[in-house]
Every structure is written in C-alpha cells, then in structure tokens.
Length: 147
Image (cartoon, rainbow, N blue to C red; front, side, top):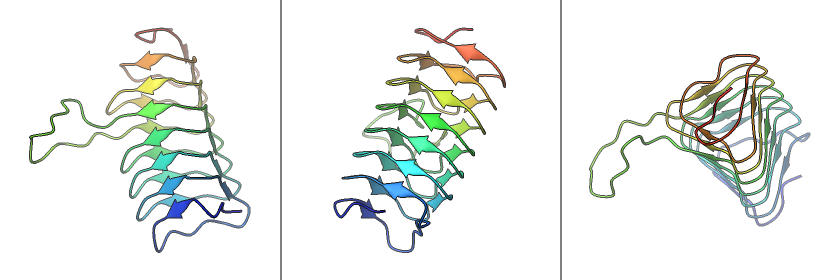
C-alpha cells in the first residue's frame, strides 16, 4: 500500500507487501525490501537501502546512501545525519551516512551522528544522541549515548 500523498522517485520499486504512509518522501535509487513499513512524513535519501521486515516510524530522516539492515526497528522522529561539519556555504561535503545492521532497534527521537554504525542486534534508547559506533548486542542510552 502506498498512500496517495507519498512521494516516491521514479524507478523506485515498492514491494506489494510493503507500506508507505502519508507524506513520506522516498528518494531516487532507494531499494526497499519485502514487508517494510515507512511511516508518515519520513524522508529516505537517495540511494539508501532498506532491508526486509524493517519498520521506520513517523517523521524519521535517513540521509542519502543510508544502509538499513533486515528486521530493524526505527522509532518515530529518529534523525540520522551524514555531515560532520555542516555549513551552508561550502560547495562540497564528505557524506558519512549511517549503517544500521540487522535486528537493531532505535528508540523514538534518537539522533545518530554522521558515519555511525549501529551494530547487529543492538539497542539505542529513546532520545539518545549516538556519537560513537554501537557494537553488536549492546544497548546504549543517554546524551551522549553510553552502555
């Protein structure tokens, strides 16, 4: 099901088993697996990959070339970033999108800083600010996020 207000770039294929909710924006070259749910008002940047069985909550932001594994949970209003030194005047930047590995879970309103890997089967608490990679099977919480 694709809500009529969702904007999906030409050429992006959404499997019949997946759901794209109202006002979601799916960029060019995005790959979406089977049984994926993309929440209302979520933006998925160009050339990102979303694995099978993943759930992305309302109002999330995933920058260009984000890598999201299989059976990942991303709570509402999670923000992932890709620019370590944002500056509106610079002509070029070195994008560092997130990598979120299989079976990871990210709580509501967490922020993932540029270039972070959230390891397999790890957990990020709601509202956490993740400044360092999260190893597999680890839980982090707080600002900044710590085990």
